[in-house]
Image 1 (cartoon, rainbow, N blue to C red):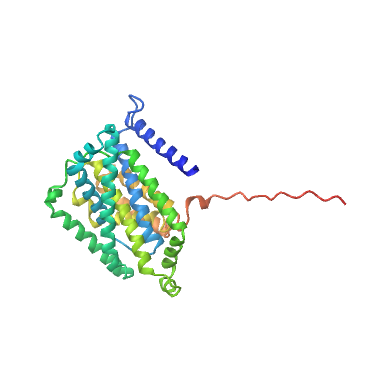
Image 2 (cartoon, rainbow, N blue to C red):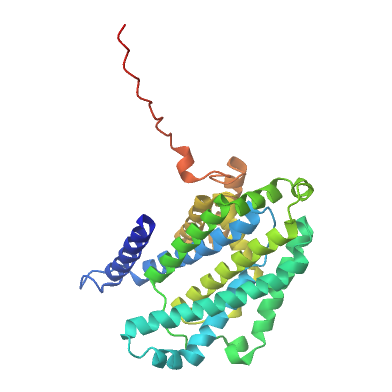
Length: 336
């Protein structure tokens, strides 16, 4: 009951914050659209970083194809809303327009996540039997295959890009799914299945010797992570209202890897911190134009030299704060 109440409060705060930031709650008060877009894209980056950390950080595999699953979720969900949006709105016509858009967005994100999960399963079953560099090369290849395949589909714009996508996602929806991603991954990590994933990361051979079906566990984590990337892609599509395959190249996959490496592999709060720092650094250095990527690369080198395990390493943010020890009450002395 307590968790349900906290969830309701969290959702209410997000939608109130969205109204405040966009000027819908207090007339005349809003923030810059550019700053709002940066904050919203940071939320999408959080979903991508936390979901990829489930594979790279907690399972110990090295995947470089996350952008491909993001592309599947983006294009499939955008196609659903652009093609079947009027029919879905008509089916729930008794609801107010805002709720109709919410239902449409949830259906589109669900279908996009399901398609990304199926693709993750098809990719994961053959590739996750490999290890190390071989796995990285295979996932990189599959990510590029997905992008080129989408590039040649005229139904979603092909090389022209996919336009005409309705603006259904906003700050509230993005951070609602970011919070849900953090909650799901943290529950997985703290479960018995999460301990199985950590055992695979520490020593896969020893985990197999103890009877762990390592391939099955890796495929499950890969499918869950792919579905979350599909949700991030759907939010990306319905926030920017335009898609092009240039947004989902292997460079995008490397950007997500940079986020989790900066924050710390195996740390959920580290992934959040890395996603926020990445977009703050890239946008903050934009005024330096031609030197922006050079300065950003130098900062990455410095971070890797000073803190090679990432800012938080395998630890969570709250583990750095000292805990107050519980003092046991002293029983009263027994009279002689």
